[in-house]
Length: 302
Image 1: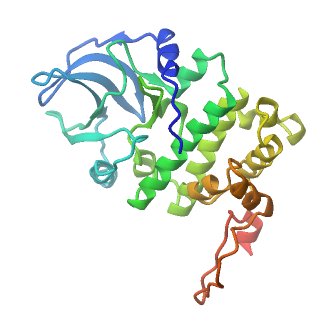
Image 2 (image 1 turned 180 degrees about the horizontal axis):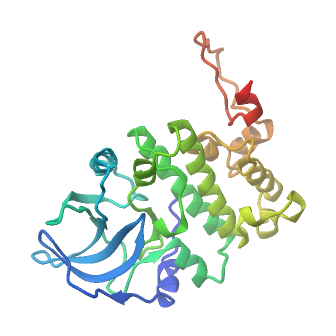
């Protein structure tokens, strides 16, 4: 559903990307460092060569974690993430500790011999904005990855542009899915789900309009996404406005996907702000409340 990935995205960003060579050689098992990349999540990120297979991989090497609880939580999270099988989640291949006791993670390498491209690099190479359909598809890919991960009990928390990769085929990939929540544990699971959904939609808004939504002072100053699309423009305006409202928003990524105005059925669901009527009445279990969207802070306090 969200796999229209123009291959030119990767190459355009790569043309504007420079990589620094590794200052010293790093070894981890059969892997030897090739180049150092910009760090992410407070850890080193390096391109590694498997000496026997002659294949490239990524190494994430963390600083020494003095908190044993945090160290164990991060290690356990990587073991769970290794079981995720989704085309928009970077595959974890090996997890372990190096000779100095630093946690290390080996993943696939989605770049080529010249470098790795993040979504931030892509946006810069495209002049600060990409075409509206591309932005919606990229956003949809990320939302779908969150739905898949939660089915395995994994929540990431808010995303940043520097941890979202674009491979050589123009496909977006989340690296180290779930690590944000595992390391920092700042949110309850429901709040982490809603915040990661909101962060993806903020990224989608930036990709589509070229403006950070957090920089918008007032609603009247906001750039309407309908300016960049002729299909369902007003519905997209309303969808983004609701999704980015600090007192509303979506509780889950599935809700965001279900209400994206991409076809007639979903448009009606969005306009009515309620799910399609079931064929037969469904009895609700006592004490269970079915809510489609996030409640406001005032409602939560009551």
